[in-house]
Length: 241
Image (cartoon, rainbow, N blue to C red; front, top):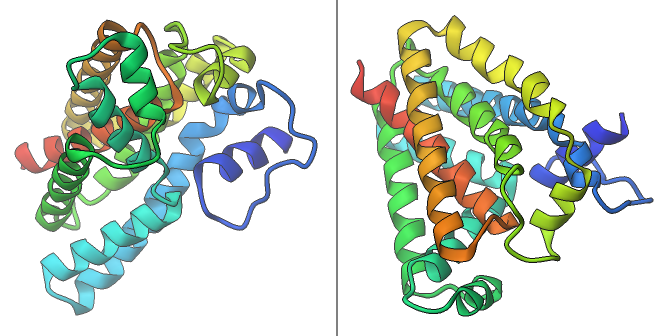
């Protein structure tokens, strides 16, 4: 129960408190539950999307569902995406890029990245049908599973969330955690399997880019990873209709 509480407390704004006796590495030990957290986030977002589409125009329903999606995470992953866009795309040294990523202010690259990812997800949500809307569940679950294999890369800095995650992470969590998102992908048929492959391809691209630019991963890279994979899964469902 402790690890489940940690996973939900870290990744959502749901009223589930983090354990009071936080220990170094707890975020990594809880990672096996990350795909389940994603599934819950996706299910709540799907309920919002489904309910809104019944009484509202498609685009308005999609916008409200996206607001619910962001609210459930408190913008955690979007913040990481913005920091990565500001730091990884700038022409500077590795140390300077890491310094920029720690800056709480959002720069031009960060603002552009946030705008583009939100527009992509909004467009995808507006293009889903009831038959393909379960893509929301797969996107939310698979994207959080992708954090697990990302932990195999070196931490870009000796402190921070990425380093804490790596210190408690167990490789067996990758296999156990994969059962939920990949089982869901298989259940969704060709669309689901195609979307999972697209998500994995995007995840690999994000991680390779981070490795080349800062030498490894950070908590912000995990955020960029989640947002990018979510968008890739949704767009694949839309493009294969």
